[in-house]
Length: 206
Picture (cartoon, rainbow, N blue to C red):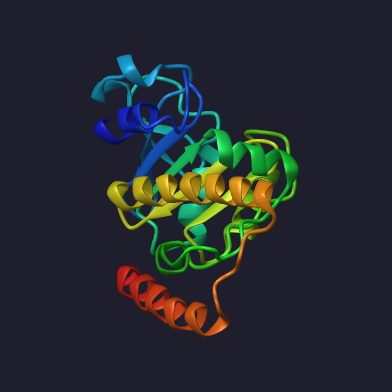
């Protein structure tokens, strides 16, 4: 619950938009409910579901984007938490369809390089989940076309940090573009930092 409330406090979403989940086991994950403001949300509102999005604990309605979370957990064994945000600058790039190239060192080390934009799909559908997973690949973040962004990590702390980093990178990219163009990191730096990212990911998967 603390992470879900932090998402709103940090301005990564507003009202009841966005969602947060954490892996419980190979077949189960806990996710925030649909239509409940983060400020008033309680532990008892969180719902545990399986990958068919059938509730196994909790009485509320699982988030409408539960299919997205399920698809990510099934694709990525190293992921223990997923945060879907509607932050402003990430949404600007979601609307314009612009990938954020590797412009910051921490993007490569913690996200895995560029932040790709998924192809458009209607919200809360299997198609959206599939297209976001393609954009995510083996990285820790993706922008959801005309929608928002998603950040993942081994736990909620890492997923929240990634989500903050995505919004920071998006803001820097937008401002840099207004001043001319954003300078991409040198290829040798990207290669070295990708090695660090791959080591972290492989360690977390075991």
